[in-house]
Amino acid sequence: YAPLAEVDPVVQNIIDKETWRQYSGLELIASENLTSRAVMEANGSMLTNKYSEGLPNARYYGGNEWIDELEQLCRKRALEAFHLDPAKWGVNVQPYSGSTANFAALTALLQPQDRLMGLGLPDGGHLTHGYYTAKKKMTASSIYFQSFPYALDPSTQLIDYAGLASQARIFKPRLIICGASAYPRDWDYAALRKTADEHSAYLMADIAHTSGIVAAQELADPFQYCDVVTTTTHKTLRGPRAGLIFFRKDGENHKDLEKRVNDAVFPACQGGPHNNTIAGIATALHQASQPTWKAYAQQVVKNARTLASELIAHGYKLQTGGTDNHLVLWDLRPIGLTGSKVEKIGDLLGITINKNAVSGDASAQVPGGIRLGTAALTSRDMTEEDVKHVADFLHRSVQLALLLQKEAGSKMLKDFVRVATTPQDGKVGHHQVRTLKSEV
Ligand code: PLP
Image (cartoon, rainbow, N blue to C red; front, side):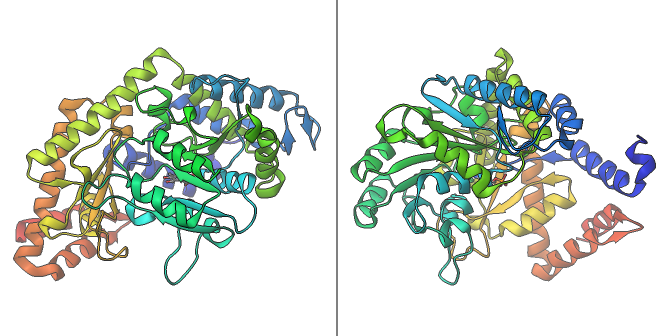
């Protein structure tokens, strides 16, 4: 029962370095958050030792008395956190991640090679919503199903609901997926339901990014219109890394959906549930059901809006010109920088961001934008005043990248990144960054 630092100082050291990176830097990755100590304790508990294939009171292993209690508690809290009536909705809390939750949901709703439509990846959709390229079907959602992407309206950069409706009349999907990884605006679920109903198709929302804000009722309610709702638990919801699948139980269309979803998770796609993670989800859902949660979600959105307006005030262009949620998509093309250059400069300066495609990018391989999110900063109690400083840091990072590019051509920028990211004595050479900066 010796502690990690004694048993494996090498791994302990890596954890310490990553902990320091998270504490000392600014975390702006829109899909990340800083979960609570309580969630981490649950996640790192003895529950990791237990096998419990099956469902509460119907397991393939003995010794599941407490695990059954835990999974039932987690399900109850999931329904409560999203304000759902247990007579109308059920939930499976076993998916290991958002991707497995989505594939299990597709397995439950469709037959192999059935047709689905999801928002295209270059327009902000997720890989698991049917993504493929001209060269390759590289995701299970396009290998095992026939998929066709819908898109943004290039003039507004909002979902082209009318375009989706007319494409659906040709493609005739069995399932329409809404939800995204990089879409800063809210969704018109009623319009999507109307299109789905024209084709007797299912409507599924993947609210992985926004679920913490949806739980706080600060965004439109997908449960009012969808048959199935999936989410990850580790983004705005602030839980451990996992997924949830909510399914409707009422009405003729949903008669056996509960069994289909549960069977799709296990045994179709997964084995034994990760009970330590389920404990972490239960704790996160408990936190998301407290009165303070609404204030957290509101602050996440206020911070994102402030970030957007500050960047605009600095003269930058944002996709859709702003945000309704936690996410800002920054279009760098007008200033002649790529997303990857700015991502790298950010890494050197302790600002964690990620390159992202923006609407109209010529090549998906060279994304012209940066995706920013405010969930993690808000978990550190940052408010609008702090975010103004963050926007200023971002502005200065981009100006530095521009300066390097202008003064010495992109080779200088490459050298800057290469030299500064080459570890010396196990440390990234920040002194080298300083030297290079002063040379410029
Ligand atoms: N769905 C959406 C919309 C996402 O953005 C993501 C991940 O970023 C996922 C699903 C997949 O989640 P995971 O990484 O847990 O598999």
